Image (cartoon, rainbow, N blue to C red; front, side, top):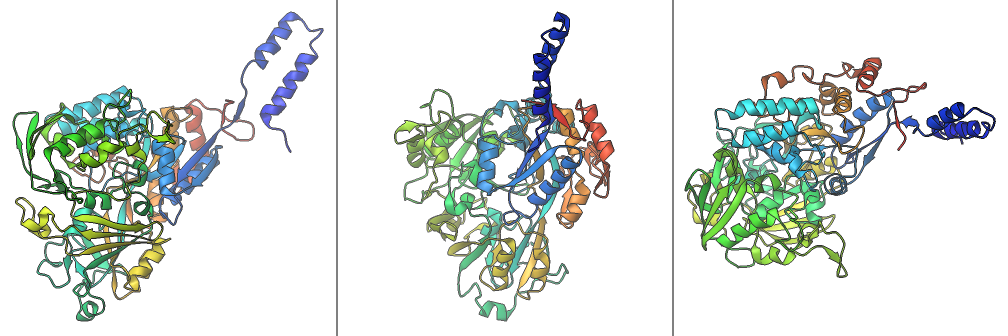
Length: 626
């Protein structure tokens, strides 16, 4: 076994000290000073992501980064793990160097979504709020300013915010992927309406084949034939006869993500990415679809003054038959801010919906069907984002406010039962209710018999009234995206709802009964840094790492063109994107050290030297021994 440089160094120093019996006091002091200094060793970084079967893109981004980190002398390891394990490590335990993942968004984000993502207020908290541990006062000030800025002033503040995030690089925005979905022809229509197929509002708006609300001129999404052609997705009589929706009103979906079969807790950050199915179980006061705000559990929302809205609730019941009341609404906002409801020494907030819950200052149940919500200092448009959180039943979740314990012994004073509960039999008020789940196999949901969508509700668009169009939703779990496509091709599933890699596209093209639906996702891929410790606490180091990623090449090779490279997390919201952060072949802030995927190693190494690091004789990037 070859001794390490540090071991050899210690041996040399020890020998030197032993031979200094006759040395002068000055020489002895010099050697002792040298011996008292820590030595250097090669820098090591771990990159965490999910395996290819769970997400075909993240691992490719990670491998691209690993190759270039190694080229500049950093010993790098890529570690793959199940998505729940990855986000438990990153979001809950904060035990990582670098991770590759997707931002949890289903549609174009409002800039205020960056408030919990980057504000130092959330640094010690688990969840999607500031997973990086960034503490930058300039970013904090800009996040707070954009919340309260007047509509005319807010764009300029948001521009400055994007520039500061790009300068500091707590994370690297890599690309906005196309959400690729395989859809079976002929059973359900409406797949092509704008947005991801797996969005709750998309699934609710589907129509049975042959209904008047089928795929007509209202469909504005990007749908192509499975081979990428523009041939129309017509419904055929044969398709309807062969297992058509009219004969079986069960919507059959297939996914590679096993988490909803294991856990249905809407506030469990490690088990939720988009929360598609929990959003169908739980109603929010309002729902959004694009720029449209739809009164949902709220029948009406009216402003009482500049800070307070009065919410009038629709008549609704929980899936266990209890009525939904204003007290449930007030409880939800208090609970999201402190899941212990005062039972712990300090508040223990929910790790999801944290940014939106901080927009609410107080809630007051006026009567059983009326609640007043007072916002913190925020632009009215921003404040209304708070009304999109899921409303939870007080009689269920109030029983989960104790500090988490095993055999009666508290194991973590920062965790409540609510945060570690699997919620095996969820009680919501949504249009779907839970029926059963078999971990690793399937989950079954059924149409709720008494949801307000059946009562021609005011303010709800016509394509959602009387929905869903199916009596049952069956979600089958499969091991890979290719297996998911095979389920659609074999008419065992109506659509895929998890990430498909580009390799699946040709298979879709070969199937006469399948079509490819493609739409840009807001869930941008990013490389996240744990800035709580060296060397990643150094923004110059992070910028040098960002320059190792050829985003255009990654899009071409890893995504095979089914993505758009980006330099800002707001790149797919054109009205918010800063003009000087538009990606035009190269990243305008941290350009790649090279061309066409080929790294200019010496230029990259020079960037690390300029960041204050040095190299050993054999080309390893060095850091002080811990």
